[in-house]
Figure 1 (cartoon, helix red, strand yellow):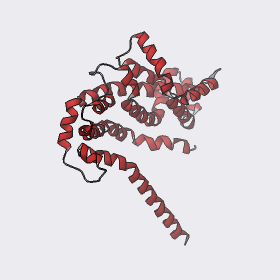
Figure 2 (figure 1 turned 90 degrees about the vertical axis):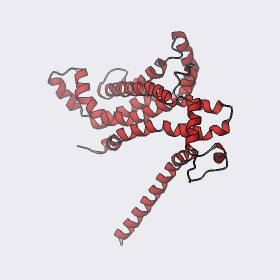
Figure 3 (figure 1 turned 60 degrees about the vertical axis):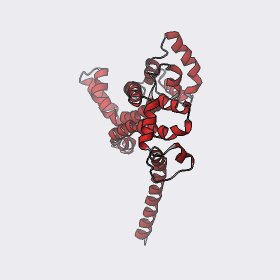
Figure 4 (figure 1 turned 30 degrees about the vertical axis):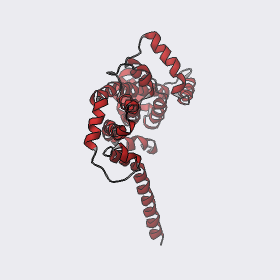
Length: 278
């Protein structure tokens, strides 16, 4: 009887999870379908049946937007920013987790406080700083700030404390390894699952970043993909561009899906890392 009840509960749980997964995929599915519909069809309501206006939307999209240039510009920002975020956040998290020095806890508290401050609050000051340094219309202010990622540092610090044994570090020091060598040869390979997990979020955030590039980039040739696609909303005939906007957004999701497929194998191992005790 207990076995039957357990199977029923398990079946209900799986059913609820399947329904939840379908609900999560529904907006993505509607986006793909709307990319094949005309603006008039989109304004009449939603449907799960694809239409025949994909070619027209494609032509309308490239009439206003150089999509491949926009993707290239976004990659020029997102890839270096993700690499810088992953590397410097991991080395900072390792230092906060394994080194006991005066001010360690204070730095960690400040890091947590910065996690709570919305980035939009500092946007005006950040723009004035970029103006002073002559970095407006440059990719540098879109890439370099990725070095400071409080949320990533917080997650990786907890990950290091859960997975890395201090005895391993001491053994490497006894063998004569330097601190940087210890980090690159021992610590960082252990942290790769956690770094890869956070890199997915970092890449998505930098790829979808809209507000900062909109303010800092005024050269149409340098605009990132989200900014380019948003220009369709300012076109003369907004209704005819609705399908093109959906198509542009659908295409812009492709690099995100590729990065997720590449790094997703690390997610489960990083999440479950703290659940295994030696």
